[in-house]
Image (cartoon, rainbow, N blue to C red; front, side):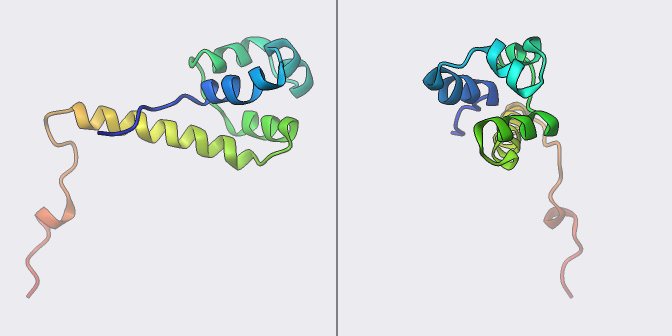
Length: 102
């Protein structure tokens, strides 16, 4: 069974904003982002873009790659779940169609 996909917004909120007592308003103000965008991210309605990753990285003094990796992992987990629920194979592995080695 695959692990449950955790949205980057949940990580942003629970691991960064709550422990540091940072509001969406304060984060928006100091990162130059829209407060609505921050709100949508922490509610899981919007993903982390490269621009957002850079801004969060600069604000929290960490790498933008961290945020991009969190988003990529979430995307992969969500898609893997969708593929796993599909009963018909979506992709035929090359090994099944490759000519036999001579």
